[in-house]
Image 1 (cartoon, rainbow, N blue to C red):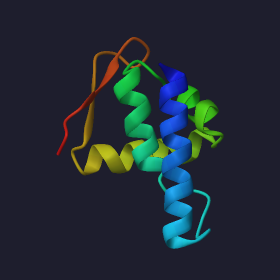
Image 2: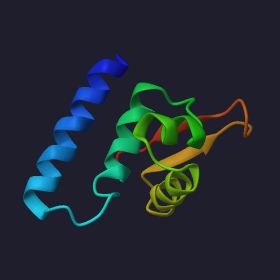
Image 3: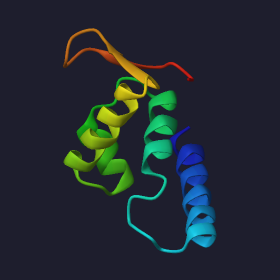
Length: 88
């Protein structure tokens, strides 16, 4: 399943770069985070960062943005909780 997610993210990144140029290394990261959380809602920020080749702090910023806009919420305790995608 992660192979499919990785292929999707690679295609998305290539499309984003062709449309807007190489504006920054974080183009499309928020959408990539959502895709990974859909596949495995128990992922930590560190695990997402490793899969996307980003720093944990970068992913934490994107997760904070997703929470602030209501696209995701966290359920359960910090270590054993899970992310819920709200599709807003």
